[in-house]
Image 1 (cartoon, rainbow over the protein chains, first blue to last red):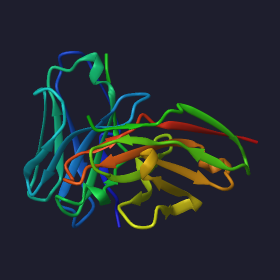
Image 2 (image 1 turned 90 degrees about the vertical axis):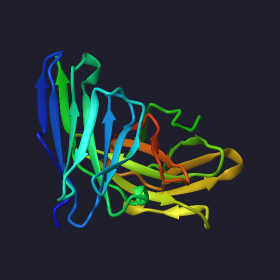
Image 3 (image 1 turned 180 degrees about the vertical axis):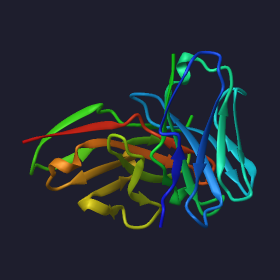
Image 4 (image 1 turned 30 degrees about the vertical axis):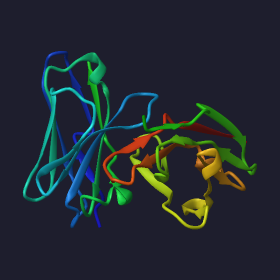
Length: 114
Length: 113
């Protein structure tokens, strides 16, 4: 079975641009969570989506938004990019909303903002 | 505030030697506790988790962790380290409302020959 997939693998943007990152969960999983991992830090929770609705949000500005599609895949959008947005963005999927205890992580998208 | 602390940024262990990585948490009630490993270019892989019951938890790849309520700790151990264990290790905690998974800052394990 395929695991969590994310695209693209790497991305380079300049300040002020907008970026969209994509995540496909494990088949049958209905919940997707997004995390930001800045170099040298642990992952920070950004969003959780379940059944196409936002179910949790971390301490991130409104420049960050996400959505989940009927096939449970998800996109993370970041507007007006700042240098500090450079990070590894991880997507994790789980079966249900309350099953963050059984999350499976993708390999991440490395975003570099110049 | 809920937090997870990993006091060691880097640890170097000789191959074949034992390993202990430290993790402390600060939560009102005992959270669910996890250890993840991240190899370069890889996502996070769950090593083990603790919810309740036996305070010594067995995980994959020969790892185990011990929960100590009195010390608010959940330290990861392995009796004999292999070169392939070199990676970054993250301790994480999930509150009982299942709302937010909080990670520590990680410990990078280096394995010397």
